Length: 72
Image 1 (cartoon, rainbow, N blue to C red):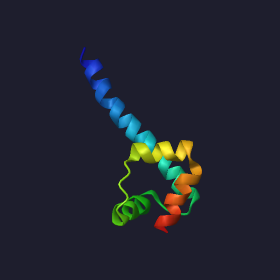
Image 2: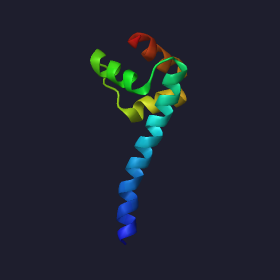
Image 3: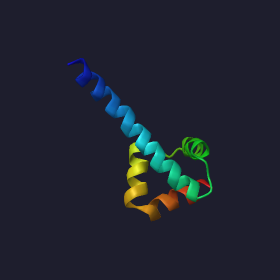
């Protein structure tokens, strides 16, 4: 029973890690690092969370490129 509780908590961490990995891979192709990308997002006032950014990376690569170009 305790394992179920642990796994529900762990799932959140696993998904966040997956989102960060996807974003990092896409950002590296654009010539930025993940940390600089996230810092630039916050500085520019673009309020997208990691889940939405990962969704954009997978489903709308042109849209993600537009976000990165705006930050450069």
